[in-house]
Amino acid sequence: MPAISVIQSALTMTSREIAELTQKEHRNVTADIERILSEAEIDAQAFKRIYKDSQNRSQTEYSLPKRECDLVISGYSVKYRLAIIDRWHELESNNETFVVPKTLPEALRLAADLADQLAIAAPKVAVYELLADRKGDVSTTIVAKELGTTSIKLNRFLRDSGIKWLNADLPKAGYEKWFNVVCDVKNGHEFTQCLVTPFGQLEIAKLWNK
Image (cartoon, rainbow, N blue to C red; front, side):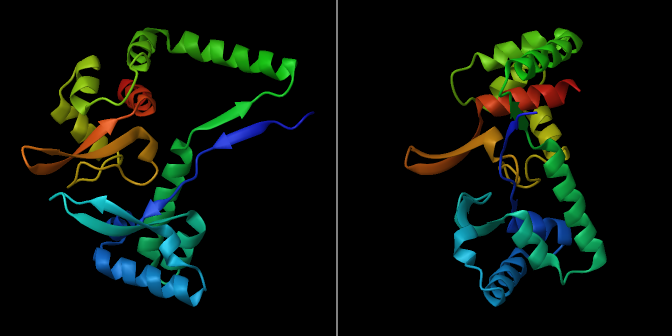
């Protein structure tokens, strides 16, 4: 059988999420990352990025792939390593995989599978199509309205589902494609807004309707 191409987005976990899962100070986690990656002769700067905190200040964090994350937490307690492992399993199970058919029979099988899935999800198709028609990023308020709820309830749902941080309107690692965090200045004040991308609109609708 000819090979089938698989497209899968790269997964990462941020130092902030590691700190939350291991109940450590974020500064201590970043110190661990810098020290351990240095000992392994891995350039930590390649994983550094800037984010906006809850007070809209620019802060530094690290976004680690699984290999580097496993390396950093190797000296942590069993309890905290297990928390990280469980989180990775969750990220991997949520990661979208798309199989690209290379032959006509493969394409026909894929079409049949999609038809079956659409038949099962028929009552929800109207919501998905409505959200999919949007041409760009929208606020959580708009998504909530289309789902028949409020932005407060939807944001609480996203936090409880491990998609957004508890104390900041920012996506957790693995959900960057769902949101677009934009910074702007209004009346002389800088502010940050977490908008939902078209991809995120569909994924949130699916998750909400479960």
